[in-house]
Length: 90
Image (cartoon, rainbow, N blue to C red; front, side, top):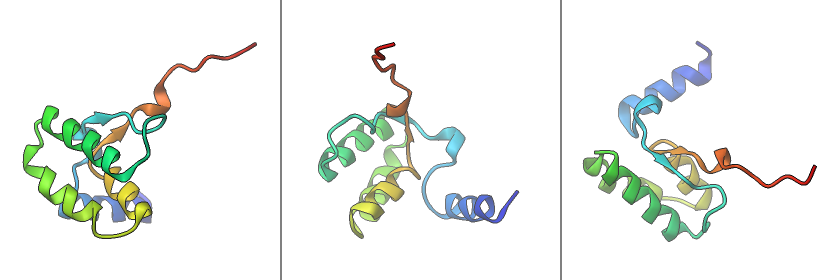
């Protein structure tokens, strides 16, 4: 376990959701507007059984700039947008 794993574990104990329990949410390839992102995360948290984490997420996500929003978002959901199948012209 390196220092980044220790830091992430410490943060998960305080805020967010442990990586293996986070609900999936498609972020990549979707509307990047901050409110659109928060809406998708809200829906994912509700569907994943983490309704009690929505106020915490919203408060933390809105407490800084756009980069903060993205960092906080990834503490609460797993982005599955990068896993979509892309059309390739081979």
